[in-house]
Image (cartoon, rainbow, N blue to C red):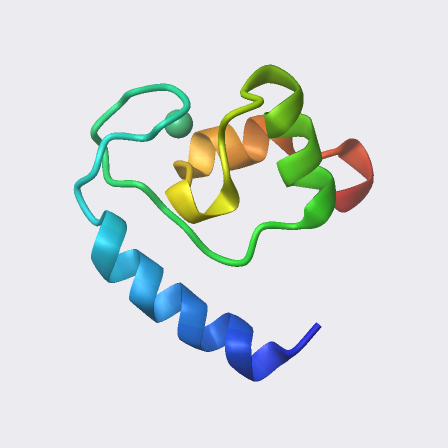
Length: 71
Ligand SMILES: [Zn+2]
């Protein structure tokens, strides 16, 4: 994993998704998107097969789908 690329992705995505409804829960609290761990994206895709990490997710959803080993 390239740390530099991750940081750049975070800033771009934060701009894109600020104030955007979360694609998972639909709440408009402002979608937080950063580098999402592979284990989390796998869990989200189990419930939302058409979701992709680029769409982002709010912090609550990220927390909800975080495997216990990553907390
Ligand atoms: Zn959400």
